[in-house]
Image (cartoon, rainbow, N blue to C red; front, side):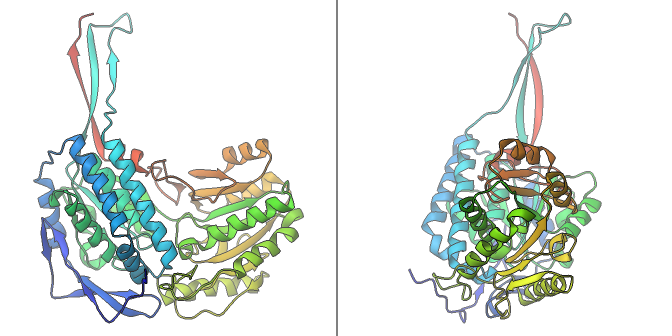
Length: 486
């Protein structure tokens, strides 16, 4: 199917509040990063719109059975599959990632709803017998999980479908009401997902979407009196601001990453080729705009000369450019200003002694896969979260303890990947890296949508996402006991 879009047909969307489509006179433009054309608009909502949505959420008591919830989630996943090309087209238009990566995102979102549909059928309540001690009684204690009043979800630009899915699917599975504010950069997909959920049978009070500029609507998404839980995915400064303002409200903060791929010196030539493939794919997937993307490749000195040419070869093979071309393997970053920043960091690293091996010219927001060797491990390029398809290689000593120290030497602690065939070394890195996830022979960000996900240090407050963990976080545990004669 031809996924080309006539960008002159601007899509004007409204907020989804209490089952109504709500427009405002003032709007927020949505730009196609490849051309910077406006492809859509959403309302410039205000605190009053968010306040209304939270009031609706707080006054609605969901009554869906486990079966009802599971069926809605299952149907939503099926509808995402049916609307795959439409969703992928708009993912590409508002985010600028290539069509291939947009298709992959729709498949991930389907997984989220599939897993949540299965989990919704499970009752994870516990039973405790009370005759276990010499103080025992003939009773049993039971637990059940109950929904909260309202959940505030604030979602980022880089996964406009999957990040929203990861918040709303567990919310539905636990009979909760959620108000979502997608970023103003990529809000259109969240609105499409809301309509898909309504079509699947979800009461509109259980998922509402408000849009607007952060300065106009953001504070209400944090401080509204009806909010019990805030779930936020985004940058470190905003996450820390939320933590400072939210006070007693429960928070899940999934923030940035600076994830290493560590290539150890026990690898054969074939293994080095495999590691290079992981490195390039991990650095360039989704245009490098993932918190778990490979942001630095730490390769031990004795294998670096054999490893680097393999990385270079694979990076040069990537076809980059027009995101709507189905053959394109790497599209844009979110806007030209981001591309300029990342390019600037590459040039700064070169001034510090790094060697730029592959540097096709940048055009607007189209940033090619730039390969940089011999990057100092304290360079801004690899100390900060460089959110683009840069492939920075840091040569590190043939001393695992020093490698671990360098890896741990940033403020982030999200994920890591390690390429080694030595089980003892693998276990040592799993134990020694200060991260939330450590994958052996895989990209740092590898997971399934059900497994726990989240970081430590500046990468997050230790609350895990993933369908199962989010379902636990989105509920209150109630204990009760009954007489239970033996």
